[in-house]
Image (cartoon, rainbow, N blue to C red; front, side, top):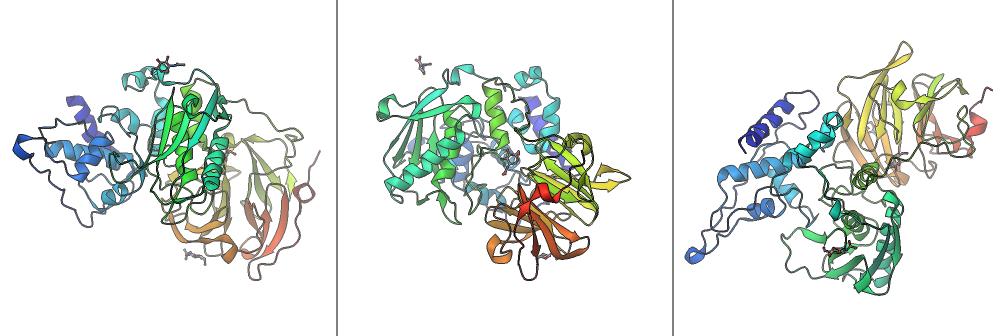
Length: 507
Ligand SMILES: *[C@@H]1O[C@H](CO)[C@@H](O)[C@H](O)[C@H]1NC(C)=O
Ligand SMILES: *[C@@H]1O[C@H](CO)[C@@H](O)[C@H](O)[C@H]1NC(C)=O
Ligand SMILES: *[C@@H]1O[C@H](CO)[C@@H](O)[C@H](O)[C@H]1NC(C)=O
């Protein structure tokens, strides 16, 4: 116990001295006094304050004796754990940021177990990714991360059924949201899903109930795992259907999370993961159409399924790819073309020889990219919500100071495209939303509807490259297979043509 505490005190303080790990600066605007637990009536159980209830119910503090209130030290530890889990400044006080996070809608399942596996769970935080890679299995075991294989499905075909609807949605909408969420998990970890008419024989039963016994007012759902999974949504929550709007909660999003529990996944601090316990990190305005890599990976690890071998899709020659994930220009003539795990250099639109692994070309880089952009001599790669930065120098990419870093929390979506702006900011896009982003300050400026500010971009735009360097009046705008020219003042676009006509394949 003693060593645990020492570790606890050491980890945060060591980390905050490392560059890039310190997170945001202390922002203790207004310490909110902790509601003090009231003594029990006639020697009965003490009345815990709402904060004490929260920390206790979701596993941040060890469940305290009913008659004995938690000590101020227990409480401070609980708050530190909560703050670390959610990437907040670790003040150990119930500060404004902590209060805001605790007010978010959430799943009722625990985040930690009685504070016990905390050390281990913390290592799952993205900031610890590097450390995690160094952990071997034995160490993981020591930390209590061992898997309980009895809590896994022994079969791959699961039957599901729906009972009831929430008050805010019709039966058709409810079904649509759930069926779509289920379909996204199809084949992840090898699972298949079939609907059944009889709720009693369902492996996964979704129901809408009053949840009058919920542990905390912010709870909107709960879900048990294998082998009889019961997912309960709060019937009286004003659910929106699939798309999440400000102030509403998408049933689709909550279902994606809950099905993760149904399959055996637990909460994780990773903000890219569907299994983050707070329902805020959803993509605002746009629908989640794919299970994040993080969750796919965790599920595969859980069921010990080997990673899929990397195969090129048919018709994709390694020499001259016909599809792009992203493309960026380090100079007017030298571009880099990304597809899956590979990158090609392109000179004057001509592919230069064989592909190479992204990781080989970009030191400590990602396996794949979702978006790339070069602005002010800095080439940035986005993979999920991690930003990798490089300078191109003497024929190779060199890691830029202060990278990788995480995308600012205010950008709720996962970038799928990017292009540079004249003032050094970049535009990040996903579905129908965009953010202008200052990469160096790691701050978003405007967040808005894509079609209002940038009409006529390709529907599924991936990358934009100025036709001439330093001239941001005209861009080549790429989607996966086509390119068009787009004027930034008039927003006019030329008809799209295939990228196979744009890039030259030198055989
Ligand atoms: C499901 O779990 C129960 C107890 O939790 C157990 O009795 C039963 O055998 C399990 N069924 C399967 C198919 O594993
Ligand atoms: C990011 O790219 C990976 C690999 O191509 C893909 O599986 C994932 O869905 C992408 N994420 C988003 C949000 O588009
Ligand atoms: C660059 O321009 C965009 C769009 O006009 C704006 O949102 C952003 O704040 C500007 N960036 C800087 C660093 O001034």
